[in-house]
Amino acid sequence: MSAEAEFDADRNITLLGGNRIVFHCHHYNLFLQRTIDDALGADAAEVQRAAAAESARRLLEPLLGASGKEPVRARLDRAAALFGKLGFGLADVSALDAEGGRVRLVTSHYALGWREKFGPAADPVCHFAAGFWASALGVSAGLAPERLLVREASCAAVTEQGACEIQVEVL
Image (cartoon, rainbow, N blue to C red; front, side):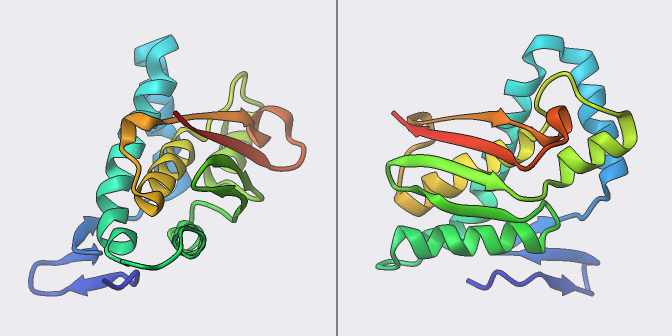
């Protein structure tokens, strides 16, 4: 299935891998995230990572999962290209493989937007990206979601230095 978005003029929707998608700017995404943070407090990050992982899995399964004999590396590279095309940032997945590892977000839609909009963050803010990369590895390597543990080890919204780093562990 194609990783290119298609506009269905008859239904006035955009589809990607057969799934409806909506594009939002960082203003919308960050205000939504901050509202969830304020409402859920300490549980907000995990809820957002889990929701992101579920939605990313639904998006990625038809795009990456049906590739048969395609190597995990090729699938992860395609996921990185899609992540960038969707405007979430530039992801270096060279340290991620079927055993887990690290994704380095050279640029992050959430981290850069957060600093611009709200100033430095107290804690990492790339919850969507963390969930996306857990699912990208799960779909690419044929792993069940419950076998993946993901966390953001560093975030440019907190430090303003360098990149964000997401750790994905296979249990």
